[in-house]
Length: 565
Image 1 (cartoon, rainbow, N blue to C red):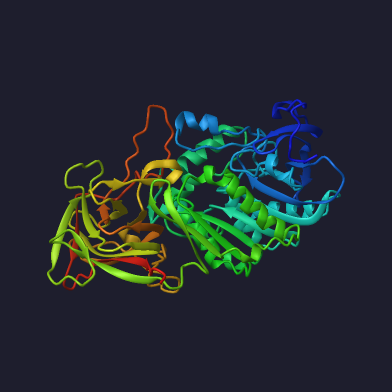
Image 2 (tube, one colour; image 1 turned 30 degrees about the vertical axis):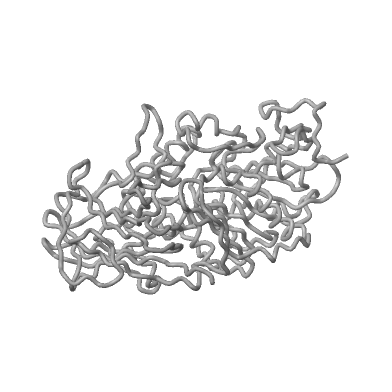
């Protein structure tokens, strides 16, 4: 009998009916019907400092040794799938189908155990029933992960091969522990995970993020009200520059050597996009693959197509099955055309080697982007005060006269000044418009549906470049000191615009938007939690000025991918 046929005669087990210790359960899976398996609930693992971490272990109901897939987070190792609850406040999370035993953002035992893997769900210290204090992304948390990996590698049911898998926080913890090279760790699947907390989460171009960060912290306090949880939002206020507080949470991505299948997206700008690309780019792993989508985060992770890709990778590196995995293109990415429409292309590396970076110069007189330098100097002003609706932005348009693919990093060089204050917060958006002049919306952060192509941010006092890390197409800021403006002082700035991919047909347009506040305004229903990032603590006052043409060589650098002959 086919092991995947399922058993309709068996009564499914509800997670609430399981008890600490050994449980023989029946899981109604999304793909294989009812499946018998073993769940060991609340398995205690004693850490080096005496703290006990608790894990849940799901394994096949048969003798043998199997490879282990695990994930670690503070969300609730025993949590039921929350997606239906999410839909009440975030109605656009997408179609997500899992078993009842799949916690938030985690691998689903309903898929992995029938395929002869053991699945382990780890509760970080200070979460669920694990002892200790919850201090996210610290050395202590990472060392715990290392210990659990090594514990799992020598259990009687383990064949000694451990892989890591999971989304968001569950990817962020992977970067850190993989850099420590646990001996039993053989492969990882970081699926959309920030790798630089300062630049990608808590500060965008030096501007503090004030919506998602607060929601994340509130969630932890609500879920674990009796536990000691680090106050990261307070720390954000106390540490506005990239100092020791942030440096001790940095991960040296070049220390990662393990095989990796990395999933990045064009649609989690403001959180995961940049860091996932950096994780892939900077890791020293010789065996690494990148897949990039432009759709919804969790929906994409749980798609059967995605699960089979993950399984094929782990079958090769954890089970040693020769399945032609090595013939998989090293980079596969979706070139977005419009909402949930695009086409897949492949490359050998990231960034793509044959990218032709092209300057589109800002023409202030015509509000256009042009391929040749602009001769006449122009000064443009906009009202940067929060909440303004009149004269609150400037736009520049480039209309394609042939089909063009833009994939990779963009950069905006800009000459700016302020008459009214000694600092400026600049928000940059890249949008697509169709041939009729209508904006083409795209999936965006946490499933906003009126999203744009890409984003960039800069607090001008943070403009000092890290010249060792910056490239001609990707400026990297030091964030070590403040360079305040003198009244009327005109300065050049370079703004990193996050990786994106967009296809323009002849007659379609790319539009650059520059503002002093959020470009996509959330229309929140009463009582709904924010689905996006926010920046409520800007330094803006009065008018901002932009200078183009002549000695003010303001330009947008775009990554053109040549068409194949």
